[in-house]
Amino acid sequence: MAALDSAVLGRIFKAYDIRGLVPDELSTDVSRAVGAAFARFADAGRILVGRDMRPSGPELADAFMDGVNSQGVDVVDLGLIPTDLLYFAAGRLDAPGATFTGSHNPAQYNGIKLCLSGARPVGEETGLQDILKTIDGGALEPAAKRGTRESVDLLDDYAEHVRSFIDVAQLRPLRVVADTANGMGGHVLPRVFGPLPFDLDILYAELDGTFPNHPADPIQPENLKDLQARVLETGADIGLAFDGDADRVFLVDEKANPVSGSTTTAMLAASILDKNPGQAVIHNLICSRAVAEVIREHGGTPIVSRVGHSFIKGEMAEHDAIFGGEHSAHYYFRDNYRADSGLIAAVVVLELLSIAAKPLSELRLPFERYAQSGEINTRVDDSAAVIDDVAAVFSGRGKQNRLDGLTVEFDDWWFNLRPSNTEPLLRLNLEATTAEDCQARVDEVLALVKKG
Image (cartoon, rainbow, N blue to C red; front, side, top):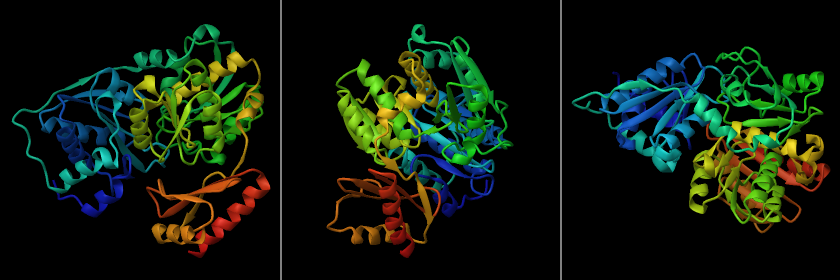
């Protein structure tokens, strides 16, 4: 095997996963090396491996499993899975695991998400850098005896686990449209929804990692258009939009209006706290202020976290939090081994909608209290320098913190400016009391970013 390029490895090892272009950055050689290094790092007798529907997945996963086996460690091949099934399997089987997915990225990308037994996270500070150093040290010597491989199908077990988060007896018939964007949602939704009293209409259910209909990135408004049209056309009660590996879900109400991840986080937190008062709930720092307010109003303790699943999971464990939510539509559940699941979030929302006996357009209103900018990306040459320049301008104005990029808070507005983990971009999220003030503040901060 040829020596691996350290610069390329440095680019594809992100804050909480591995992701890159195939094969220029993420090749079978890289995948095999990651498999061997992860086997050493995880120090377990077996490792779980799954993949999504991307065309590069089978070859990359096979190389990874070869690397694991080379270290004398057995492999449990989970086959085609949504990412949240990996976390379920790592908890249920008490084993570390990996799944190959590019999530919402275009077809030419793939990636590796890793976890330890019990679905404990593996991020930049909890293993990824150790694995990178091992790979940079050169090829690992093989064990005297190779590990074995076996295949296990946990899809039905996972579907039953998802349904365990709701009281099926409380559900009422609802018309549901789900856009799975040719991603893994089309594989698992029928199993989850089969016993439930919902009329489920799935758009683009066929697994196709080339994404022939639209990108599997529902945070972009243009990728919701087909779902919105079908909701209106069929008179559906709700629309669900999943990303490529189905670990995130975005909501569309019956009027085809999108529901933000912050609003969904607040709704889920309220429901969970009403059943489990006095618990801690994690939210990331770009969630609406309404999220912390709702958590307190329902008897919970809000705790802020950096953006990203490994950080949220770490906070969940430290505070024994019952739930966690991100503005990007990742939702975490203590009883799901503290891992995120778009499917669990979806069924809990449907239970809420059943109990409320009112349309989602009304149910959402008490949780929407401020005007949000949405995430605005600006390409810059030096993210750190621009952030420092913006911080200097706001020095002595508002309250600043550097938990994740730069956050500046005022009584009636706030913003966060943080660098992308994958591109030379700065991401701005801003919130104010009115839409007019929000736009004015966005213009003010963006002018500083572009000046830098």
